Amino acid sequence: MRHKMINLCPTTFEIASKMKNFSSWVRSELLKIHAEQQEKEKNYTRYRCPACWKVYVDRHNFGNMSCMNKDCGYTHELEPIE
Image (cartoon, rainbow, N blue to C red; front, side, top):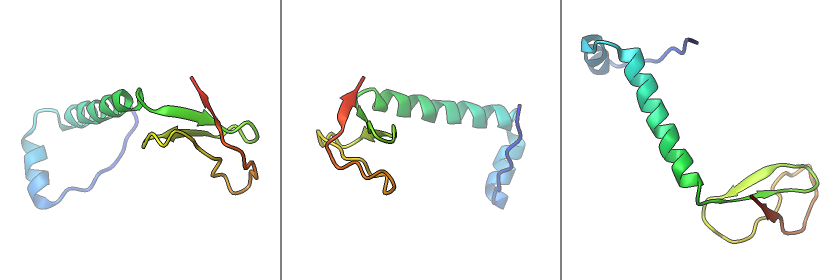
């Protein structure tokens, strides 16, 4: 396991102190959030720039994307990837 320090206010500190395994609960909640995000992203279209290989995710379903890498210079519409 790796360590990550968090700051708690006095109220949340008291709540966490009463929990049997606060660290386990934090890990579980983070994994839930991650799983929900992954499920949402299944419906997003991904695009890759053929010049710089940066991948973009169309979260708003605009239907087309352009490379937003200011150092790339690629100006054409990006092709979707699977």
